[in-house]
Length: 240
Image (cartoon, rainbow, N blue to C red; front, top):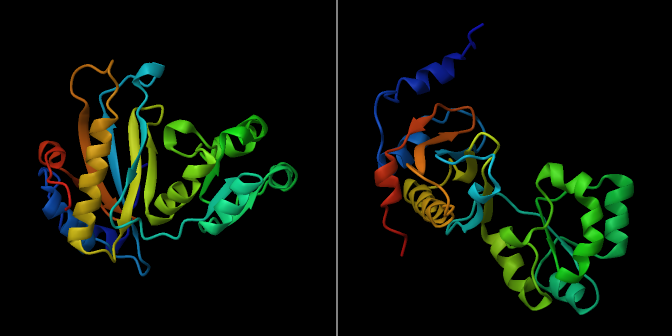
C-alpha cells in the first residue's frame, strides 16, 4: 500500500525537481524553503556509500566539528573520578561521576543524555554498560573521540557542546547526520555541510574500491529529500 502524503508535504515537494542534482548552495536554501513544520525542524544529510558493511575494515566512523553547531543543546555525561571528575565539572559537563553513576545507569536504566565521555581508567567499569549504552549509540569509544585522557577532558567537552557530531555507517552502508536547524541561514547550512563532507572523505576506508560516495540527500524533518550533486558537494570550499 502506497504511503499517503499530507497536503503540506505535497506542496513542498513541488518545489523540488526529482530529476535534478542540486549544488550545495541551492540545496541549503531549498531545504529551508521546503520545511513546513510549525517547529524548528532538524536538517539531516543522508549518504549512500560504496562500502561493504559486512567487512570491518570498510566501516566508516569518525566525527565532524560543525562550525555552527547543530542547533541542539547537547547534554554531556562524563565517567571520571578524582581530579578528572573536578575538571569535567569545571568544563561544563552536565553529569559527572564514577562508580555511583555507573550503578545509577545499571539500576535505573538512566540514559537522559546525548553523549558519554570517559577517561581510559574508567573504561574497564564502563564496559559492563554495553547492553544499555551500546544499543543507543552512547558507549564511549576512542574512534569517536569520547575516550580521552583527563587533561583533554575540557577540550573534548567544549567541542561536543559546540557541535561535534559522530557519524557511522549502518548495516546497509548508509550514513545519517544532523547538521543544523531550519532556522539556520543558508550559509550556515552550507558551511556545516562542507565540514561534514570533508570529514566523510577523510574517513574513507583504505580497502574501499570504486565510487565512495554514491549519493547524498539533504532534507528537513518531515520535508522532501533534495538530491545533492555529489561532485560539487565533495569539492566545496571549507568555511574560513
